[in-house]
Length: 353
Image (cartoon, rainbow, N blue to C red; front, top):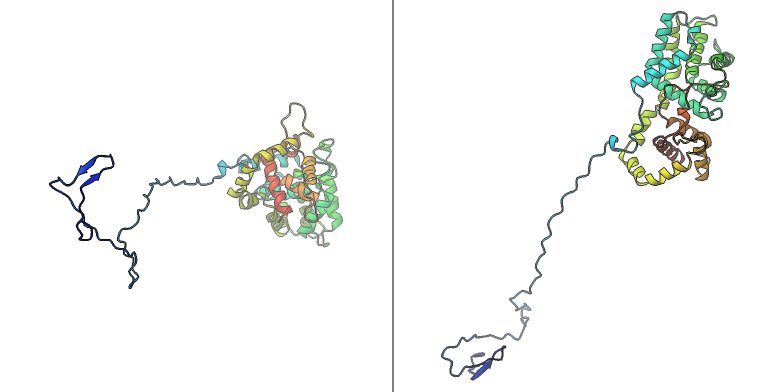
């Protein structure tokens, strides 16, 4: 039955080729269809199709586990092997320096000797960092020491010379008297033309004695007051400029630098390996010397008007870990890999400010 018109159908062929005889069939199911020849209404322009097209089935994708990034900690960094100064280490350094020096020849008695030593203990970390900077400006050979040039720079910055009563000639005499220490004559780690760590301290005590205790105008009653006044008025502001540990914590010991170093670790290890041979003796652990880091800077074309050889020397020395005894071993001249990494960071900062 199609659109109300009766049609006779005698038989129907099925898909399996079976033929059904409808003429003798007692019951029939008839579907009445209404054919709509227009898909869009001619007046309202509405779509007449009521059945929506089949949409593809959604594929279930299980959610990924959220990756939680581990919080960066210094102990997991590549720089962790660099050991910062401790109070115990600084105390040992002071005791070593004091035992090597001849401050007792200037100070009047044992009480003054002990009290002046405690004044330097209170500021020893700042003193040590200041010494390392000025010892790097013009090393004698490859030995760290405050040369005449660097010493004059330090004195100029301190503004301690007032020509009344202290004059430049007085300071020069104190430098020479301190540098000519016959007890360590022949020790190549203590050059005659420069002041090593314990000698700079002794020289400053001699200058305080000259400025505040002599010259006919005794400003201080004793050497303790003289040293206090000198440090407070002339050297405290200089000490604050050279805090190496503050630089590490602010600019270097961080996740960003650590990521860069871990990315290029193999490259840096190869560079260090290639330039750690010049002064290494058979059977000795590899180390980089001052000449070799200078060679790296030359080969990399780093030197220009903003970055000179002196800057490489400063980067090398400030990157070295503190050693108690600088007179009887060469560790302060032998750069290890973790120290090389810090030197690279200092060089990069200076070369590309």
